[in-house]
Structures are given as C-alpha cells and as structure tokens.
Length: 296
Image 1: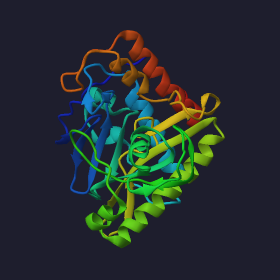
Image 2: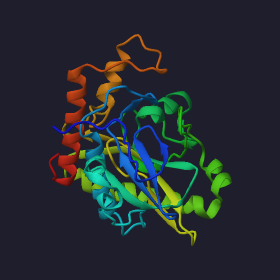
Image 3: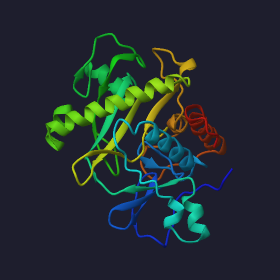
C-alpha cells in the first residue's frame, strides 16, 4: 500500500485553494492542476484520518468516465501529464496517479444531481412532502425504489457546510432558462449512459452529481469529478432490495460508524479505527475494479 496523501505541498506552482478533498494549483492563466488527496469528509466535516489510495482511485474512476462519456459533452481535461508541470521527484510523487491538468473555466453555481432511486435526502423529502426538489412523485413509493424515470434535482454549491437542494425554477433564475434546460438534458443523458454501463458490471448507480463550467465561447463543459464513489451512490446489484438502504461502495461505512459515536457532526471530527479505514479503502478499490477493470 502506498503512503497516504493528506495534503499536497508544491513549491513550483501557486496554490489557488484547498477543498474538502482536492488541492488546486494555478498553471499559467488558462489551466489548473488539481490533486485529489486521500482526505475524506463525512457530514461535510473533513476527517483527520486519510483513506489510503482514495485519491488515486477517484482519479482513475473519473478519468475512465471522462473518456467514456466525452461524446455526450466536452470535459475539462487537457491531456497534459501532471508530472510534466511540477519540479523534482518529491513533487512528481505527490501528483503521480492522483492529479489532472484541466482547462480553467467559469463554473456554474449549481450541482447537477440526478436520482434514479429514492434514497438519501430525496427519500427524506418524499416522506415529508411526496416530492423531491419540488418534483411530485407517485404515492406509496418505498425506500430505495427505482423511479420510473431519472429526475434532475439540483443543489447549490457550498465550499463549506451543507449543499442545499433547490427547485428547477431556482436554477433558471441562477443561470437562465436555456442553459438550465441544457444542463438538465445533459445530466440525465450522462446518468442514463453511465447507469446502463454500470449495470453490466453488477453495479447500480442510485444517484450522482455533476458539475459544469462554461468556456470562453459559452459552451457547456463537464468539470470537477464525475461518477466516482465520492460523487455517486453505488450499490452492488446482488444486494439490492426495495425497502432498505442497500450497502454501498462509498463512505457510507464511515458514516455508519460515526453515527454510533457521541459526536455532534461539527469539527473537529473523531479519529477512525484502523479497521474502518481499511474497510473503506477496500470499498473504493472494489468499485473502481468492477467499473474500470483496473486494480488499485
């Protein structure tokens, strides 16, 4: 197992920011270097313990999907080798297998969430109102039930704290009706194509979120990560049952452990036991191997 990377430290490039998982560096005026660390956040709090190889796994998965879905919408990848833009063996080791060089674009202020199954916050909303993000659904649906059609349930983007679900009408106010319609159409198509492929690998994609930006010509571009175990809810098809929350290939194992503790879900987060870290790392690796055929 490789050494985990909690935070990158490059001296050859200026750092633009540090997110919950990713470190971003400036590269000329029109490009950025994005490094995916092994940090993990749960309940929107960054945990003190990294998950070994998580950043490499997420990068491998995202790159697989960017390539597979590039016919649907352009993405922000440049094809430039990340190791070619940093200096020294130590910096090359920090970016190896876990970094991408991308075009610098204007990000849209929304998260494009698509749900194919009734779970998570969507299930909670449905129980209270019979709707998800203002979309009325048939009565009598059960937890984890597959929806008749995937639904577009956008959210606001939050650098810190919780994202908030918003209605489609609010998306139209934020970015305009024509662009909102384009984002919804592309998001649902991406979800459909990915779900059909994942099903052949024994994986259900219950829901996922996409992020988009605009290039200098105003064209829509897929950015950030795509269809990873951090941005999606993956279920093993052979364990799926309507009426219960199925096991998943993501950080749900960590969330379940944290729920057993007397922790108020505010910083600082508690440390994770070694067995929880190992089990979580194994879940990420298994998802990647099933979907891409590549072993971590």
